[in-house]
Image 1 (cartoon, one colour):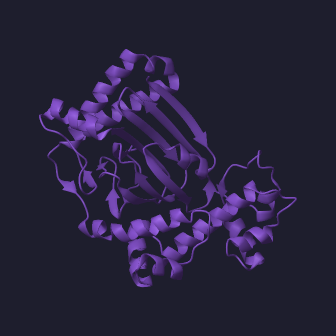
Image 2 (tube, rainbow, N blue to C red; image 1 turned 30 degrees about the vertical axis):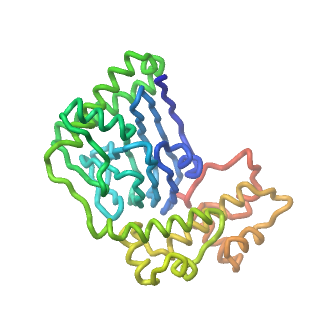
Image 3 (tube, rainbow, N blue to C red; image 1 turned 60 degrees about the vertical axis):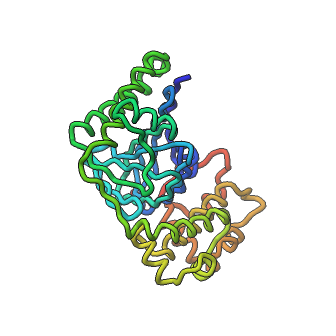
Length: 326
């Protein structure tokens, strides 16, 4: 049954749980009020998503193997981003490999769109439209379709989003959804089979196993603070090697990435804790911050309030997630 939902978020934890077809972990990297919107549209076979995020982020995404997704920027004025160390500009289409894992970094607000079919539906659409089966590439590819093809895809994607916002009942009508889906699939296949040059990074692909082990370790200990020495030992690389990999994929050192992770974990713990039974010191220590004064200064600089203010707030009245002040 066709359906659509539109949601807004003031907390990246809630936002990352709402993204479909990909498991995402998001860390905001600069000051400002965090605001995100996400439109999800399910047609008969095609899934669509369209999103905006107000602040620069670094994120890790792992695609589900039961979907074959594409990703693109929806704003022609969007600053280029990096996925797996490859620069992505407006007009590019990222065709993800099966079960792809990538790091995404955006130096400004992010406006993106995505579409996905099951591998079987993608193969069938390829046979019907271009006479050959389409399968997910062995290595994630960046395609630069002809402007007319990309413009059609963007216009159809935006039109579906507008219907979800203004006339969701119309979009839910089976025949309207079928017509919209057929046009979107045609535009998608046209972009994926355009003969223009395809870009990929062999060096980035060769570094993926290390980054995958890195994120697998973080995910296995998602609520625990981790440190560089133990991580290097666990995934079998040197400090220098991990630094080089993180710089390419994350645009920052592993030390900075782990620090951001620990700060976000601490904030989440403070927001969920009972202020009458837990202290800031306990939570700071639990996340590896031994100097309370330094922790409080860094926390306020990053999140725009003292840790004690986060702790005192009732869990059912969360403050909008903010990184410092604009």
